[in-house]
Length: 263
Image 1 (cartoon, one colour):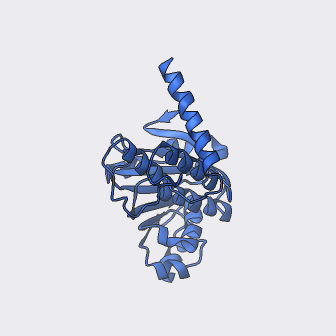
Image 2 (image 1 turned 90 degrees about the vertical axis):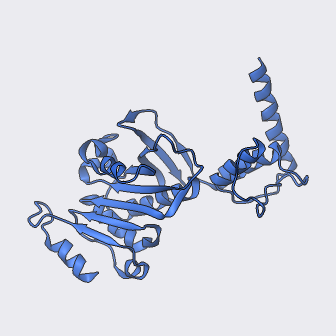
Image 3 (image 1 turned 45 degrees about the vertical axis):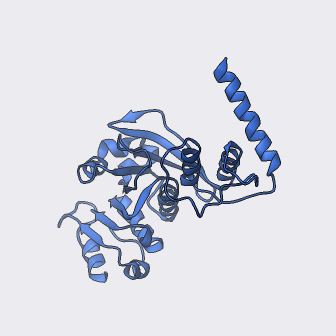
């Protein structure tokens, strides 16, 4: 009964806060919600002296402000429906509901000790044709080992394995939106953002490198061909490693050699 009463009071508090500050709108990140929540619970926080968390304009930070902040965050940001099944440490079939790109399906691995208190690396792994979403949930992880090998290199790294719909521009835009979502909503070290694209996923990532290479610290282009333009990539100086078999059964090695020569 006590929990029910507390829940009802918390709901009333949020409603009152919304009514009291209905005209105020700001753009907050998930980190701001965590910071204010930690502050109210007397936990350690980074320096918040430059933050404007007094959304209720009563010269203090309290539960009203937290409720308003959550409301503003939900109204200004894409939301996620979390998956429910696990496969070798990956939570399967999460869905980012992107206003610009529609539903983006992805699998994600969080190290057990990740709690948002320190920056972690981020690794995006895009699969070949056999790993696209219409092939089945989680098949990219079952067919390829990139997401598991990456864990051996850095135990403080979040690994995202998208399952997109094709290897063209729509999927490139989805990859960018998903990368930006993690950068904005999790404690990610922007100097440690990596990606690989295998086969068709490499074609997609080459388009990502054309559009937003500055998002990434380094990129592995594996057994694929380069479909994107090089100008922005060269300007960003994002390192690219190209790996392909001399007699790759689908692409051959010439497209990769040509991409290397262009770069």
